[in-house]
Image (cartoon, rainbow, N blue to C red; front, side, top):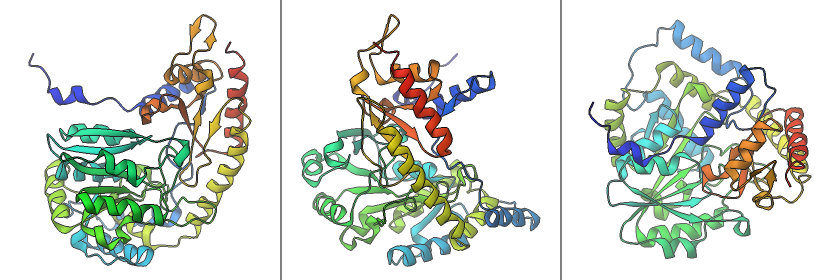
Length: 397
């Protein structure tokens, strides 16, 4: 048998999906597992959006569409960027894809190749480095911590750029930390980006899930680097539409046209029915969306008080998204029976096997001491999980 490509050896399986699958397997076998892994809202897709999808089926809108998405959806995105960010773009600046992850893949394939380096501030979402490697480029990690609320500073960015640097990837609000970049912070980072003339992917998929009265600022709003910025967004997180698989990228038109060329060969086009549903999501009644955001904020507040009760841990209070990123370094080196908890991977294995709580190891995001808990679940179930964690940690000596 012929060997497989070397490309597959450069990437790892998604730890988030692996742990979620293991939790589902244990639950199916009758185990009561509190699952705090999933990065998706636990709400159903709002009815008006579902009805738009049903109407698309009834109208027989079930054929191929334009490779980069239908004109109507692109026009909605154009209006969104004007209304939300006061940014003027055209439909030539928009490509609709099969989820924001697909949009990221298209963009990275378009912009990066062998010999290029892509700066990724850690902790970072698991798929960023893997998508960079799939494009034969090299991820360059810059570690951040609680001292800067897990945010990259202009000084550190400037020191890490060289002649091979093609791109920077930022996410705000962040998965896994929930940190958000302020307007002032982004303007200062933009000066470094302009100086070195590199691309920046600005992942704003969680832009509507922001708390404490804070506002989201898009890097697309910074005129000096408009042509350097690639905005990634979609409907999955805000509108509880993870399974519908609609995301989009907004960028300079030559980037977008190339993305559409790649997509035409990879998937032909985004799902036709989901595109119609996405139009309703972005332009329809937003009342239910705000209610979901308020619920997440309430869960964040309740959950943070519970997190603070876990002995010997630290946690940055997230300003957005729906994750707690908790420092468990105190417990590394402890023992359960005769097994040493050497890594946060070991700790998460202990959590799922003993107190029966599924969480994501921080190593998936580039941290060797954190664990990520999702609060995209009921406050009662989250409390049950934290109670189990606290009791479980008493078993470590």
